[in-house]
Length: 89
Figure 1 (tube, rainbow, N blue to C red):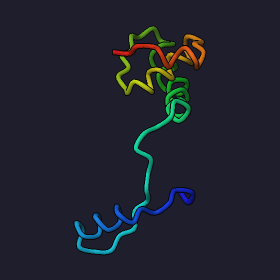
Figure 2: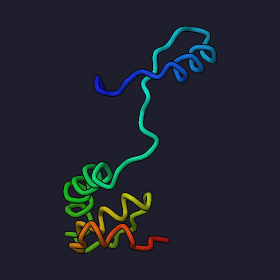
Figure 3: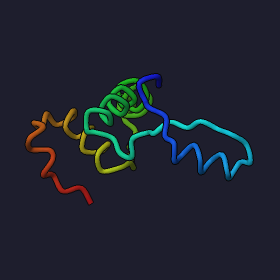
């Protein structure tokens, strides 16, 4: 987290709300497809697949569009330039 800068406005707002001085970092408001895939694909491989799919169980995955898009990209070998146009309800 050392590469994430501090936010003056966020620190000020939270310090006023908490009645004490607090420093808060300016975290990104969204994640890239790569960021989502770096979390979801390992979780799928380490938890979902061995604990459910490999045992023949049905699985329902509910998540954000970007996380689902990244997982589909991995599972179905969809190229990155095509997955961005994929409609996910």
